[in-house]
Image 1: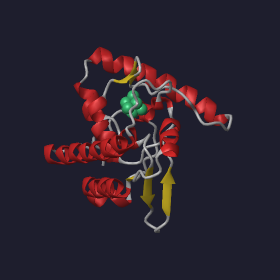
Image 2: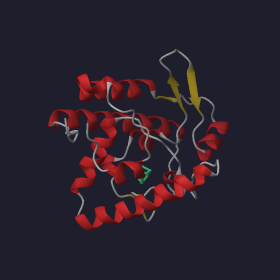
Image 3: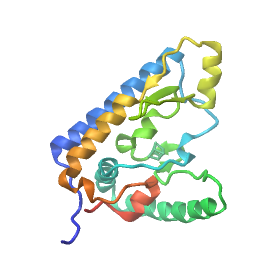
Image 4: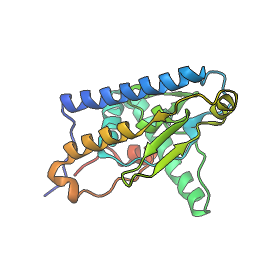
Length: 199
Ligand code: SF4
């Protein structure tokens, strides 16, 4: 059977938006307890190399891309193609790419409402309990770490519940296709270049 585009129902999209909203609220709470803000930072996290693993986020990202003007989407796609080529070259040298995300324009995200999970959680100190019970600690960005050095009473953001909710959404989205669907392991640029996911 010919692959068909993964389409998100309005209710599913609402649940993704709700999850993203809750992530933002948790981020704001942790950042607020640190009196931390990205404003004035000399760095930009959007050049960090991250891989993403769900059809849910891939599809939701494309939901946002489709709303953009054609010309803007084309320009982003050209940028994404460059990103893919450059990142492959850097990875082939055994290094981790540091390349600005193709969605970033003049330092700002041009698809802010549809940005991915890690874009919403990165920066502040966080923890994550893996399915095998092992706890992973994320220290936060360099500015957050400076802040924590001055105030070690901060409670890290717990990413676990958000990962679990995303996994639940993914299971619901894929249904019986879950066992056969190819694993997703893509940068945002690759998601853009490949187009919306099909199964
Ligand atoms: S999607 Fe937006 S917030 Fe995330 S890395 Fe790209 S530009 Fe930055």
